[in-house]
Image (cartoon, rainbow, N blue to C red; front, side, top):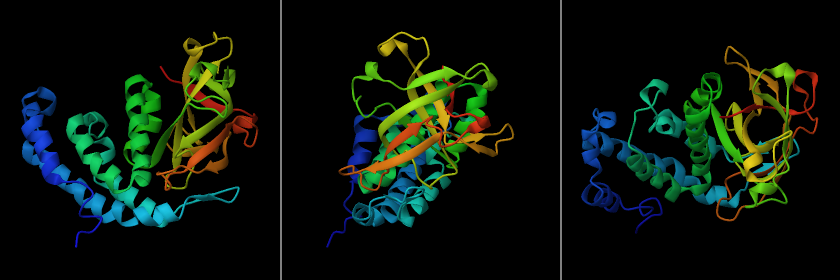
Length: 294
């Protein structure tokens, strides 16, 4: 009898696609991947398969039957989710494709995607948390400041912080030019500091107790900027501010208002987030502290 964990993907099919069709081992001839080999790729793929089967697939049904709950203060998830994600971070998969100078191993994207396919097939709900965090970190590595990378990205790659993307609003889905979330310069916070006010809807992984902090990337319109898509900017808005020494600071003015049901990804928190409504007052003022990206 074949069990669910045995049949989530075919390792033989993945090997065929990577090596016979795409010939990814030839990437090792390039300077960026010169320290790698097929043996290295195989070892990471095997570790991913093992972890996906042992820690992700084993609670897929349980997380489907036990959606996240919110009591008005705290989100509760089944404990297996955090255990699986701690293991995922522990073997270095969050930073697998990143540069060595930020703790990565410079794995080719093609190989990394094949590794992550095991987790998506095993449990898409739990896999969504690292997926969003890796995308968040990758964007900040490209466009963030050195301070943003030091304070927010490096903890993400260690698995201490998780990330989101906050685009949609209750009345704004794909029509991003209609975004109403506003950002006003915060003179007390320095050159790229703003106060963000607005509501974001359908934000996956938007709140939980899985990590020390949550790094939101928020689309908003800075005060005075033009209407439409060209007037939008991106802001880094953490759940907790981070002090210069890397320790957690004040609670930022971003709060969870409710959870949505998400078909197929029932283990993922899908959230309604309010920014800047005054539930918290960092530095004595209402408004979610956000930092311009790019």
